[in-house]
Length: 111
Figure: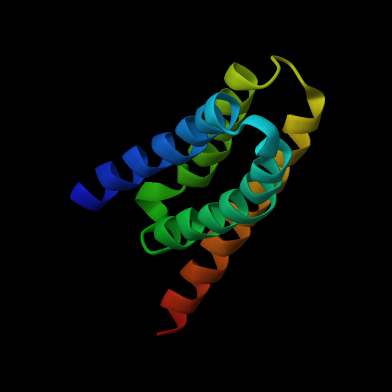
């Protein structure tokens, strides 16, 4: 249970806190920070969340959905509400999370 609460807190910090930090403190390097956030940090964290959920898929199957949803909430709050490009990112992060969850569950089943 402690790991689950820790992952929820990490998801909230990363998916809501990082867009706020990018908007608030990035200044002239804002676009570079957004590229790193959207193309490196968030996909890696989505895969990590999928691996975490894949270890106990019966109880944590919704965690990749929660992760992608929090990304959408964070970006719409701090960048631009209703921007359809963020729906595409959200879908890709969801696919990354679900695929890594299924692969992890499959590998755990083989053991």
